[in-house]
Image (cartoon, rainbow, N blue to C red; front, side, top):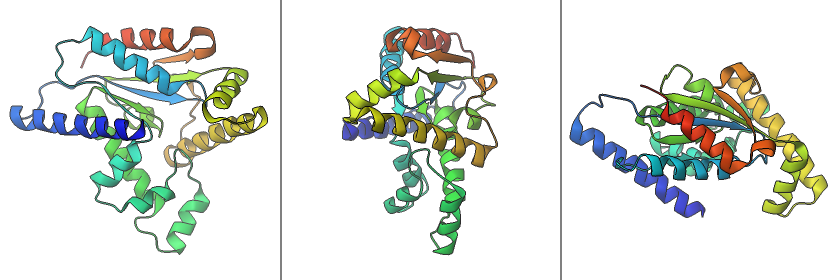
Length: 232
């Protein structure tokens, strides 16, 4: 699955680059979505269903909607011609000041702060290309000034999130509970440390959706309808 997603991301970049080269400067910016999420709330299933929804309602579009989740770090390293081993210094939404200090002490170049900045550059570039769904890494903050980007926050009850993590990752209920809480804290710390923002602030999103009450299918349709209402 991961290799398929990476291939899809690479194909998306190539197609968008080719389109820009053949038609000169793009006259309009295409829509994009950022998804902030609690751990285990079903963000990836929602994103996948959202892609299907949007493709069905935009049959004339040549370029398919593409999800950037864990593949985003590979994209950042490729964009900035950095060695792949640097990915270990910026795990998914898990960066602390200690990591930054250690990177400086041991002369890891670029330091974590630089990687965060480069990640932000890549996120903004992808959002400007349009037809992307960007999951995590403060995407809503980074692209907050782009009018064609819809910002969504997904939440769910802790019980439902624990159940999903147990099912998807084979963890015990206690392990899943600890995983959810630790990941949520890490993501909040990442956004707070590098963007001085509260990840749970509802004012930073167009909509906050509870997938425990709504379900992934319904959530995707609701987001999709909102996306189609965006104007550049």
